[in-house]
Length: 287
Figure (cartoon, rainbow, N blue to C red):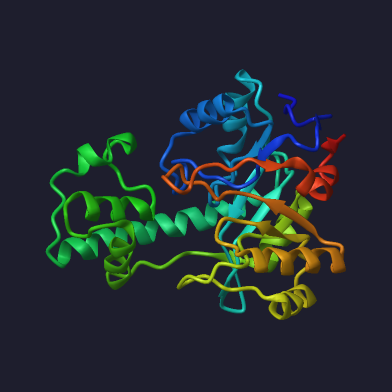
């Protein structure tokens, strides 16, 4: 199937969003529901970047093609560099033939193992989940992702929200599995893709704040292609600093909502013009 992004031309004002998630990772909407929403809202181009899920990209593109919505091949790879988290947004690979698949599958496998270990420890600690089959019906009642344990804790009244549930999970041994960032960037480049640091300005616990000095250190070791400049958690001051940084170093930059289809985390219409260098690098023209 030739993707709708092939020879795509967008106007400078075309609404795009290059960072969002479905239930294939930690989003709340299945792919079809998200696609239907994006079509109804009039998006001209999107990238669905589920965590470590390269294997679902072709299917999502096919669903969107039925509605004539171009979907750029993308994935958010869970990575670390020198012990620091640094999720990588990779764009522009062939969904069916790439070097990112084995790397991301290893991460998914390790995360699934940990998810079951955490669940067993929660049961050992006395937590009971009699409604698991009902709550995880979409998974056939099975545990597939770390968020499933969090959902069970919330729905059974052990935690008031996902954040508190994650705290309980951490005490039960939950840990985020990540690939080596250098290996991820190398796999992306071998796949003809580009790699950008996702949400470098996030400051919450567990995230690494990449200021210009740290970005300089990173780029001295790993040939990243750019950063996600526009993100809901970036202040206007940080956006300005990042804009100056990417222009100074001739880097690519992206615009994304990081939508999980939650209130306050819905897709955002960014002007295509903002991401012109990235889109043109990927063969999408702006005029």
